[in-house]
Length: 133
Image (cartoon, rainbow, N blue to C red):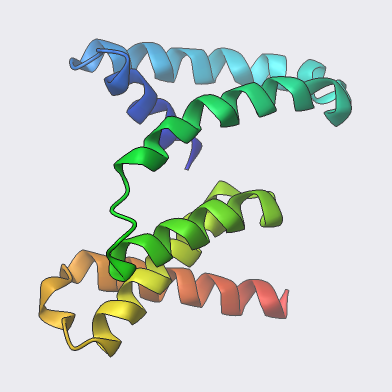
């Protein structure tokens, strides 16, 4: 998930070539060596930075079609689940599952790409696996 978010952030910042991905990959390699030092910083010290980043990400909320429940409910569940589960992956999983279920229940299952069904099944399998762990 982090790799995707970094890639999306690079594209949003204007990086459209493979150089952006290569620089991001290089920074991840550097992060491998710096991670133990950064891990020593308590969560309370990083919380203000995360709040600022989260507030900057809130600008995308205006682009959600809140009048369409097939779009708004999964978007809302995603935004709610990320902070409550402390996981971007879990938040996205809830959004994918809700989107797929809403489309199927409303009889619009043909509008959903096969890859969304595959990801939804993988997310459900992941939750089942984690429940048993």
